Every structure is written in C-alpha cells, then in structure tokens.
Length: 477
Image 1 (cartoon, rainbow, N blue to C red):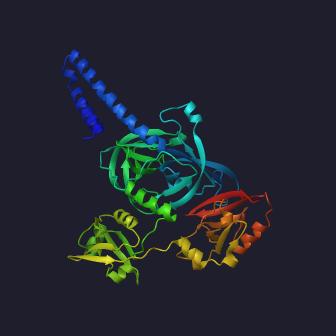
Image 2: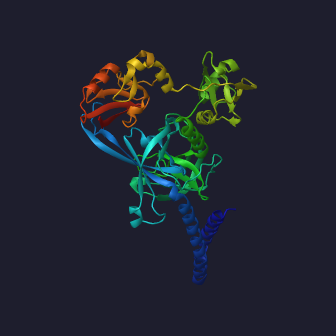
Image 3: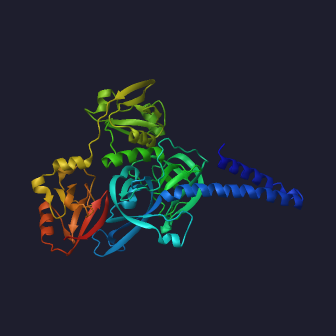
C-alpha cells in the first residue's frame, strides 16, 4: 500500500476511534489526541511533497483580445479590450504546454506566466517570468490546445498514457482559479468514466473524469494529479449555476490527452479515421421496436454508401458490442474509442446482429480535414488577400458539408494562411462577416476594403469561429 494511502487509512481509524471517545475517560481522550498528531503531520507532509513536485510545471495563461461590451448583440457596435486567464501544464522542457482549447479560442495574444519558487509568495511573485506563446495545434472536439514558448530546461509533468484513476481515489487540482496562480485543491474521483451528454459543453460526447476537488473559473487547462504526482487528466469545465465550484468538476483522461498531444505536436491537429458509420444510443423503446438484442448500448443508424464500413459488411441496425477490443456500452465510449484509434490501423469491430455476434475488420481511411477541403476549393489567383495574409473563399452553397451552418449567411471563409498574416490571428475555417461594421460578401470586397485602409488605421473584423461571433482588432503597417 502506498505511504499516503496508509495515512488515509489511519485517519479513518482515528475517526472511528473518536466515536468511542464519549465513553472513555478524559485521560484516554488526551492520549488518543496525542497519537493522532503524527498522523496529521505525515499526511500534511505527503500532500506538500506532491504539490512541490507538480507546481513548478503548472503555468498561468493570459489571453487578450477584443469583444463586444455588454449585450451589444450580433452587430456589437461598442468594443472593449478583454482579458481571460486560464491554466496550463508544461509537458516538454523545450516549451510545449497543454491547455484547454476554449482558454485560447479567439485569442489575439497569448502569454504564459511561469511560476516562481514553489511554496513561496510575495517576493517570489516578482520573479515570475512571462513569455509570449504561439499555438502549435488545437483539438476542439476534446477541448485541448498545444502551445509553445521560447524556453528550454523547463520543469515538466510527464504524460503517461497508461495513467488511470478509480472511483474514490484522492486527487489534487492545480491551477489559477480567479487568476490566483498555483492554487491547490484536493478531493476524490467521483466517477472515473462519467457520461454527461447533456451537461458537457464539448462538441462531441466523451467519457470524462468527475471529481469533487474544488475547480473554479481559471482552473481550465490545469492538471489533475493523483497522490503520486502523476497527471491523470486535464481539468476542462465545471457544472455550476453560479460559476463557482459545486463539487462537479470534470477532466479529460490522460490517455486521450497523450494521444492528442502526440498528434498536435506532429501535425497541428488530431488525425482521425472515417469509417462511414453513424451511430446513436439505444433507448428502451428503440430496442423493443427494432428487435435489438439489448435495450442499451449503441446501434448503427446509417452506413455511408461506398464507405469502408459498407465494404466490410456493417449494416444499419447492428449493435456495436466492441471496438478495437474495448466494450462499447454508450455513445461516449464509442467516441473515445474512435478518437484513440490510430490512422492506418484496421478497426476490429464486434457487432450483434439478431442472435449472432459478428467480427469484422474495417480498413478505414483517414478523414480529410475540413481545412484541406477548403484549400482545395480556394483559387490562389482569386482568393489571396495579401495584406491579411490569407487565402479566402466566398460563402456559397458549394461549402455546404465542409463548414458547419453559419450564424450569418454571408462572408469570406479563411481557407489557408500565408506567412505574411501570421500575427493577425485568423485561422483556417474562420469566417469574416464584416470589416469596421461594413458587410463582407466576397473575397474581392474584402480585398478592396483592406486596400482602402491606410497604414496605422484601426481594423476590426467580425469573425465567426466554431459557431461563436467575436471581434479581431489590429492595425496594418
């Protein structure tokens, strides 16, 4: 048994003995109190050691940009400079840092505050170092982003893809809630694989670690560690009516974090497969009406014609029993299995069809990224906007199925960036709807509006990114 676990067990025993204190003499109670003191000191020392091990690798992330002041609506005529604070964890000594994608979404400038001397305050805060950060890649589907700063020899918190937790295990959350850097909270794992389709703000359902360790605004992107100081997850969001901690915090499990990190560092995005299967959760009524072998789990509702799944023999109405050897009992479980599948490896699929269990191999190809499809549609001669450093495509029906439905039905989609536009903040997939409150309806219109702007004059673009409207303010030289 781990030393820290022994301390916890001893504390439970001490708590049980305290219930007997009512019927024992005062002298015995005094003796009991004296014997419990070393236990508390040992537990205190154990927690302190974990914090000292982890804290040097936890950073504060400051994000600045522009946004509408108050409830300005979609047109947002009044702008204000906005600043948000999140957390991150150094995973490589050469400056690679993981955080949540929502922390840096729409950022104009990202800064990383490296911690001072662990366990010190006041003067140590003045020795904190601030570094500008750049985005290496993002994985919005699981709310992860990889940043890099120019630094070497940094303390790190390694990523162990085998790190897992059990319900009831003690964990610590470290981050910058409300901007208070290097804040430590402690609790237990409430659930090791929580399915929260309705509550999660993530775009796809997935299994998350649930903890009652107090997590507040600003903790996003910080690590969740066990009593050995091993990172078991990245804190991502809370469920709260007031915005404060209600003991319902959630973290992305370490195996998903490690898989995403390897992809983001190498490609800038997470490579995924395209099997051609559409699936949905089985309800009691669905199971009975379709004559399925079970009234729970996941059923194939559609198989794309000509897809790898169709070629392998998958049919609508098949119940997915296992994916790559992992049992599938919910839609988030299938989402996680799909996410962790490596491109190039065949999918081992186990299906229930009537009273038969069928094993199939699906040779699924890599899913083409929407930005790749956009770049294919863009015409370098007609779509280039040199002063912005982008290649754009007019919003039209030909983009249907490549980009999600838009809040505003006109604009220019950023298909790719050029070297000249690296500092502006536009990303492939962004949609430019307006420039200085004037509508943008075509690449040519955007190009002419930019050409008419004199050096030093302010430019504010209204940009839609992943279904959210924001403003991007800058000046051109």
